[in-house]
Image (cartoon, rainbow, N blue to C red; front, side, top):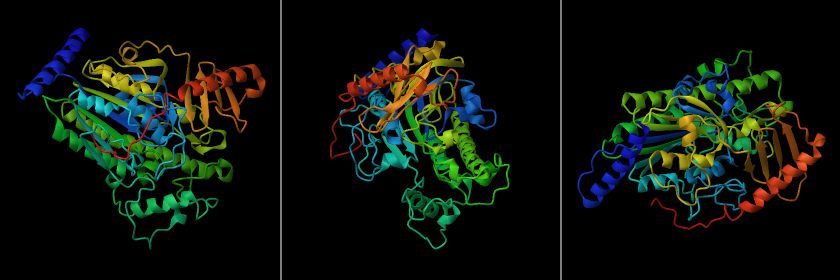
Length: 487
């Protein structure tokens, strides 16, 4: 069956290209459709299918029960935009240049795609796919950014985080309803929360939130673009469950058991030592509520996929860009120097109804750069030479563990080397002294730093990280153009 499907892929691609080139109506194209669903700030261990028995994620769990689930998937470059540069291009993103762009945070790697980059969307379009991007991720649509490259159709669903969607009215916006007593009224959190509150006042039901509108729009796009003659590639990007952690009350109450009457800490302080235990419970319940809220609308979208009869001829990839801290080592949210498992491990699963894959759970390290070559492999298309990731389709098909001995994750000036025995975290360039080492066999949650007990190991891993970074500068460089248009 697999050999026949592979033959059909090649034959259909050649036939479709020939028919289109001669101006005749294209014959039925039997290659699979592809749907990618990316969520922001969804740590792997806050999903039922990854072992969490408290968090309710029935939609993703049901997809996982029919998919190849990768148990050791990790980001390669962080945070949001650097991660997407890796995902969209299949190319290594760490270490990154310090290139400040208009309307961007000052983070290494937070910049548009390079002129030299070849994106997955461009490759899919060149392969004859109808391509579309439906997203509420505001950062990739900011002025000067060009992440829509290769998409024939794209839609930005506005209103997430600090998106300047609305300018008023402001008279009923009380930022103190969302701020902890330690968060200043003039700080960055307060400015972003104020904008969010201005946008938020127009939402009357849960369907008015950005991510429900995103998945509803994705479903509408599917209805209008299902075709026998041309397969589609649909990329869905949602910023949820990233802060603001502000789920509808019913989702919040699934997890909040204490009697809390304080401000709704939708973007809380980064340190738990300024919070009471009840405030920490409140914050965790907000995040859990956002996870379940996001899952619910993914479920509605997947029901649409099934209703349209697409489950038998579609590949669906679900993943996240990174996780976050939920109180570990006294920290919340995510930080550049906190690249432990809670922040870097992500869910990744591939459903392949086209080849009728059997569900399985796959060990071994995989990373974001592997997504692009895997998708191209599954449709029988050539992988661009700039891609540094590798296809993980064989592991997904047969369940064989990936063979990588260690992997690297980087954010700004910090990086980690992860092996099955140790996690090393340090700064890859001279400057501030910062090194940590965790024994992941004895301490799988990576909570106890044992660097002082293993100076030889620290020295070895420091050398590896430095050499990895030094070897990466030419790989991660590129050029920009002032004309950023959809090709």
